[in-house]
Length: 87
Image (tube, rainbow, N blue to C red; front, top):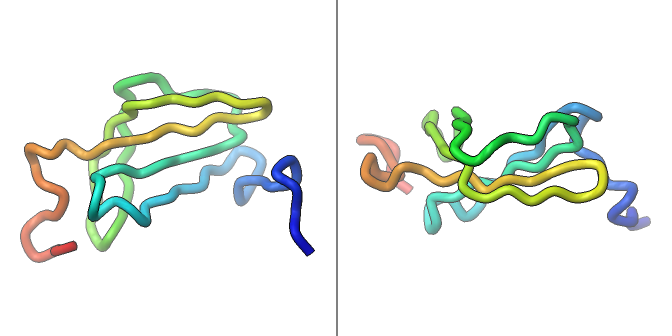
């Protein structure tokens, strides 16, 4: 049985869902939530992805009825993968 988009929820009412499948190619992570507080451009998140902790910055914000999503990007000057943590 498939759920309609209105029935889909983050893992809790104030939780977040993180999509990092394309990080190795794009340096981007998408976060979405139904939490009431929307991040701002430039806000930073520490996210563990591909075996390493990354410091990512909010670069795009989208809001929708009942929630938001943000695209966060890695600082490419520091590289996507620290030594010993290849893509």
